[in-house]
Structures are given as structure tokens and as C-alpha cells.
Amino acid sequence: MRHEVRRLILLLLPAGIFFAAFFLLPMARLFFIGGSGKTGWAAYAAILTDMHYFSSLVSTLGVATATTVATLIISGIAGVFLQRHKFPGNGALVAMLTFPLAFPGVVIGFMVIMLAGRQGLIGQVTQALTGEKLVFAYTMAGLFMGYVYFSIPRTILTVMAAAEKLDPKLEEAARSLGASPWRVALDVIIPGLKPAFISAGAICFATAVGAFGTAFTLAAKINVLPMVIYTEFTLSANIAMAAALSFVLGIVTWLVLAIARTAAGSTVAAAG
Amino acid sequence: MKHRGLFYLQLGFTLLVSAFLIVPVVLSIMAGLTVNYFIGIESGLTLKWVFEVWNGYRDTIFLSIGLSLACLVVTLVLGVPTAYVLAKRQNALTRAIEELLVMPVAVPGLATALALIVTYGSLSGFRTSWGFILVGHVLFTLPFMVRSVLAVLSAIDLKTLEEGAASLGAGFWPRFRDIVLPNCRAGILAGSLMVVTLSMGEFNMTWLLHTPFTKTLPVGLADAYASLRLEVGSAYTLVFFLMIMPLLLALQAFAKPRPAKFVAEETDQ
View (spheres, rainbow over the protein chains, first blue to last red):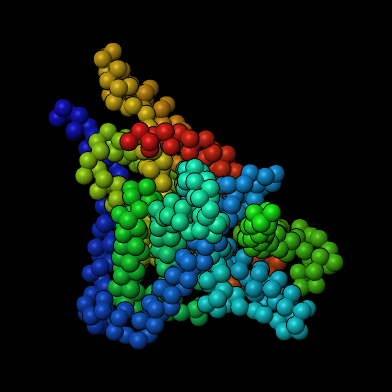
């Protein structure tokens, strides 16, 4: 028995050493560097006390919340519909909706530019219709659009998997008792999908808070925390502040995912 | 009759969402093949931009392929034994280990990259090599390999299989090689596809970890978007699509039979 325990420890060792050397140790160092700047440990409070950082925290949380709500509504409707109704072309629609699953943030940013950028489709259409060109790719609205674009594929997959496990009898019962489709959705489908919504929502939120590529492609002027950290690090060479901010950001995203995991049961998995 | 209306309403909505996701992809592919996107498709089709990308950014493509394969090897070596241990012992300690391993996915890549830079940035030989990026990619992809293998190992009766082999006199290594590995083949394959796909597209960390000599494909993309004309950026994106498309198709084809298997497993518990 003891022999077996020793073997299991030995098997864990390579991953353990790698993880300790390249994650735990660097994270600990990041934490201490965060407190080593001009302001000392107060750097960790700066995210709340300094108006500049606080406003970017607020806009980061704002865009993440908006993304989560919009993505859950869109993917909830489309995901349940595609799971419930099998019609010719259903598979093609699912394939289209999940195609952008592996796009990196930079490519998502470029997709937003294709739609809402200076030479984008929305600009051309609005110019033809109203004479005025609508361009919003390089603003917070563009970032919101990018994050929704990014989050739809994975959320739809989660919703579809959960909707498959819903018992159709419950809906039939509700319907036979005279419930309208709206009431069935509100009282049967949405409660049944709640764990999926919580887990997918948490992933949307955490990704939108921590993502960097999309904002980077769209504009350096978008005032969200990852961009602020990047600017502090590269342009201002304020490494301590960048370290403190990114440590706080990491805690926020990790907490959101951990809370969701407890709320929705052990099935919640984080995804990039 | 009212319900038919509802059906078409939902269908219309779903089509609209699909269009939102696919139209920009189509536009970008078109732009990459058009002589002048501003004038439109009338200006003619060309492969000029694709060649320009190939000439200017070929290295990023090779580096990304090499990196993702190296990342695959490392995650296999580190991840499969870890998944085996986590499947063998399911207690508070192994759950804590699993939780820890997932942290690099939960924590923004920007934070992980900064942590690596402040700790190892002064080792200039390491800092400027592609090994530095590899470390970041392994941290980010390892949980996916572990989870994927662990899911398969938890679904089979590993204990009985191993005891059977052990009672026939098989030592640990023959058991691991002939019983454990073949049984988690499906998990290894799914995990491998995931690791390669993620490594190929990783940007959040890589942007800080890279040097002018170690530019990956997504780093090159960001460069091209920022400094080159729209057509070149589009052609570059087209190259990226062509590279990840087979991986995605394989992942989708492969992920399909999985739910049925895991539903049975979950209702057992």
C-alpha cells in the first residue's frame, strides 16, 4: 500500500514541479512585486481609491455584465430552439454557431472591425440608408459586440447539452394544464436550465473581465482593466502597479468561477 | 397556428444570430481575396495578399505549429500521469490539486504572463527563446488534457481492470501501458485536439511573452491588423482559418458520441 502511494506521488511529481516553478512561485512573486512600488501595499487598494483605476474597474465589470446578460438571452433562445426542433439544416446552423469557438481575441476584434469598422458592413448599410455612416467598432460598444460574439458559441453548446437532459414531460404537463408557451419557458425551461446558465454565465463574465486580445485589436483607448494593466506595464513601466492590478483581476475572475461552481454543482468547468 | 408563428419567430432569431457570427467571417475571407476591398469584388480576385502574408509571416505559422506540437508533448507527459492519479484517488487532496491546476485558465493570461516575466524575465537565454512561450501555453492547456483524460478514466471501472491484471501478475508499468493507456485513448485524443487548437490561438499570454524573434501566428495577426492594410489582415486571418478548421472539425466529430456516454455515468452517481 505504501509502495503504491509512493508511486502515485512519483507520477504527480513532474506536473507538480512544473506547476510550482512556473505558476505558484511566479504568482507569489507577482503578489510581492505588487506591494513593492512607490505606494507600497496601498497599490492593492488603488483599484478602489484611485479614480482612474476605479473607473476602468467599473467599466470592465459593466461590459462584462452586459455581455453575460446578452449572451445568455441570445444563446438561451437559440440553443433551446435548436435542441427542440430537428429540421433540415439544423446541423448546419449548429455548425455555424459553434464555428468561432476557437477564435482568439484578436481575430474576434477583427470580426468586429469587419462588421462595425470604418470599412465595415454596418457602416456601408447605414450610409446607403440614412446617408450617415455608423462606425462603433473602436468604442465600448464594439468591445461589447466582440465579447458577445466570443461567448455565443460556447454558451450555446452548454445550453444545448443541458436542454437535452430536460424532461419534455414536464413541459407537456404544463401545457396540458393550459400554460402559455411564455409561462412554460418561465416556469419550466428556465429553472431547468439554471445550472447551465450559472456556469456558462460565469465563464462569459470571467472571460470578458480578463480578456485582452479583442480590446487590443479594437483600440488602445478602450478603458478596461486588462488594457490599463498593459499600458501600465509597457508605456509607464509601472511594473508594481501592473502586478497589483493583474493580481486583483486574477482573484476576481477566479472567485467568480469558484462561486459559480459551488452554486451550480460540480459540473462547472472553466474554459478559455 | 399560434405555435407555428412562434416556431418561425425563433427560427428567424436563430438565423439572425448565425448571420451575426458568420457574415464577418465571410466578409473577411472575401476581403483577403479581393484586389481592393474598398472598391469591392468588382476590382477582381487575387491571391496577391495571401502570398504577401506567406512571404512576410511564414515564420509565425511554423513557430505556431511547432509550439503547439511541443505543447502537446509536454501536456501528454505531465497530464496523463496526473489524470491517472486523480482518477485513482478521489479525495479532498486530489480535488484541491485539480482546482489548482485549473487556476491558469481561470486567471487572465495577462496576469500569468506578467508573473512569469517578473520571475524569469531576467534569465535572458530563457526569456528570448520560444521555450518561454511554451511554458505559458502548457500552463494554460494542461487542465484541458487532464480533464479530458480524467473524464474517460472516471467513466471506466479502472480499479477492477487493474486488479484483474495485477492478479495475473502484471506489474505497474505493463498495467499502465496495456490497460490504462488504451482505455483512455479517447480522452487523450480529445484532449490533444483541444491542446493544439488552444495553443495555436493563444494570444493573451503570448503577446507579453513573445520577443521580436518569437512571434506566433496570433501575434503576427495583431501586428498585421494594426499596421497593414485590411486586405492583408484578412488574408492572414484566412490562413489562420485554414489552419484551425481541420482541428475544429475533428474536435466536433469527436465530441459527438461523448454526451451519451457521460449521461450514463452521471445518472449512476
